[in-house]
Image (cartoon, rainbow, N blue to C red; front, side, top):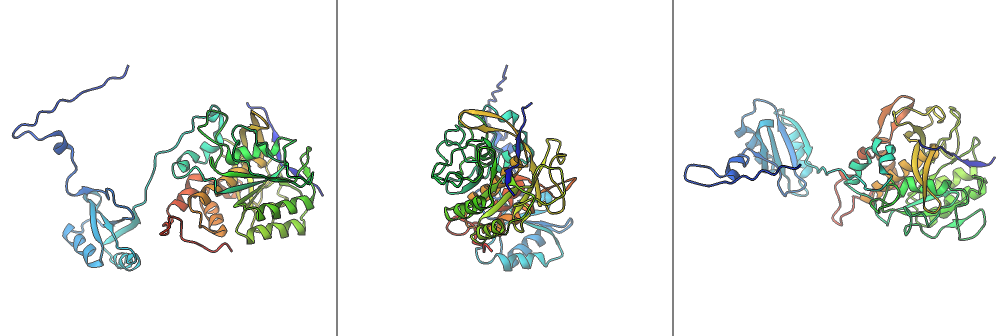
Length: 413
């Protein structure tokens, strides 16, 4: 049974400045003094890795301060109106100190004083048409990371055009399993469009913004000019991508019959720490389609701008997650157009996985998968919910970095 690409083309639709002169005289406080917060209103300032301990209403400030000191923490700030103390805890003592604080009935909540950032809005010409990234809160996720070139997304598809302006300079040397050569040119357009959703560059004056702006793209051509491909080529492409450094594999292709060889290839990739994402198919059916339905693959359904499952998207309990299913994205050479299908939902998830990997390179495959699947927004028709890039990337951001600047390693089981 041939596997086919599961995307389809669809045409788209005067400033007033007030100067304040201040004269400091005896008995008249300066503006700085008048507006400076009091001693009991201070955050963590330049400190990092602080903790916020909120006491229950009615606990005297003296008791709260004593409890903090006795537990072994150092107070660096206080928000008295919220009964909250800002604490630093010496490295290596966090577990014991926090356990001591948590056991006291006078404490209401304890949380890490993590950071938030301003959202990043791309300036690309077609950004205003891109409802998908906005729906999944990508701009806020981009304030934490826009990806790294060390993170590789393999596009196992019809090939990728390296001349596409949004992809230029980040398309690695790939392989064409249809022609058995090292020129995986895109003679269909589907693979280039998928790559744009996953990883189009942003703020470059052209085109669109993909999910992972800086990530490198590994083109693996397994589908021919008609968008069809054999099981052997697909399986070989998965293994080749794994052996050539892919962190994430996106497969925007599907067929109704399972293949033990493709399943083995998927297991090979996952056993080597690769996150595998695949489109669920466009038949509007609950029938399982492959490779999306293989265990461990992140199967992706397609949703609309109204956050509803598209009628043509496959659905059912076997599908793990959903994502926006229409995208204004690149075509071969310097062109862009609307494409719709689960083919274009899948790379939204793949690109988000790549953002997580870029932010925390030492995170294992299983951890990244959990972050994706546990950070969704509930919608009707998809048990796992719709991807939320902000929640997913934020969950990685909140992981404490290791001493070398990367996250604490986790098994890639």
